[in-house]
Length: 513
Image (cartoon, rainbow, N blue to C red; front, side, top):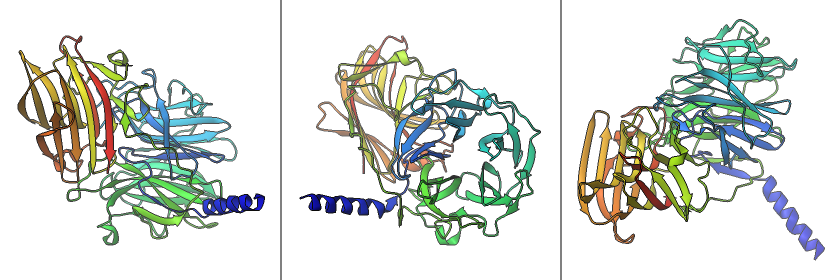
């Protein structure tokens, strides 16, 4: 019996040790500008959040493939002021690092304070209030040298700046110096410094965060340069002929980490195309192996590109338990939910198995303040999302396919005088189109469905028989047509001119396919 048990254990260990392959992206849906750090055998990753609150989603992994969101870095208005921020504003490009037992996250709030650092000794706890870093530009990063000095790099005026700072006070200790302009691609940004084999490697993104996005690298024997470009730049790109049909495009804005087994890995952003080279899910987080021999340049995935299906050796895989598709609102909203700008959290109450949202006068067209709106990332091109709501003294409540205040499709139960209607709204820049369907009662089931070509909105009076309320072309909400830096969010919302009306949502169910 003991021999059988031992044999079974050895087989399990061998399978884990020989883990092979994974599917990209590893963090799905709107999760751009990834940055990663390792502490022992644990990995932590952050991504940009722009106009959404809380700010800077925080993920944990044991294998770099499976990630679980454990919270956000910026959870208080004293850390994150977003009123007035749109989808091109708010939080850009966070970087997470760990040094001497403390976590540091540096980022830019382009709508207010500029560059700042927050710190914590407990990765699952609260982070400090912002520590300003008075260096202009965006995409700041931190690097500690072997002598303990902390160096800041950032993007400004078409080049990469370097200076020494005190990361605990934000004090700038040396005059910022321009150290590299990249290889000639537009918008050199997202710099990171790594030290290996006596070389300082400076890796950046170039080409803009669109189809021409790519990653380049240079190195020097001295941290302040001069830096020499790698002969095989770019080290990651999908704009070439060989990858023009790859379903992943716009790859770049990368970060590198050495795993606890000595292997090297790169996380980067990219987007999955649909409907004729459009993308709507936002820029997502992808993973690729890196070969980095002694004294050599890093080589990403052997050929400088990545794929959906990655047939490569991995760390022993340790997946997390999947969240249920249906949220019955029997507990407080988890970290996968977001709000627009700084919310009035008193407008959201969970009790008796329902989410009550008190409406405000602001609706989904609001560009400055926070409407009564809570949302969830669309993670796949094909999906179904559903809820049931009951309206009480509110003007309207419903669901939204939301890219931005100027680009969204809505379906709602709306009160107009003494009658109820199912209202669908298509907002595309300066164009707004509305349709109404008569409806009886204050309770309705709503459903959203999506595929690569179109979104459809549905309603039901009994939760069983659904009728179509309208169809919208996906392309009109894409970044290529509408333009912005975020991705589609699926929203639940209520609107009430008096501020006293509300809607009770019984559940939210999201099924990606």
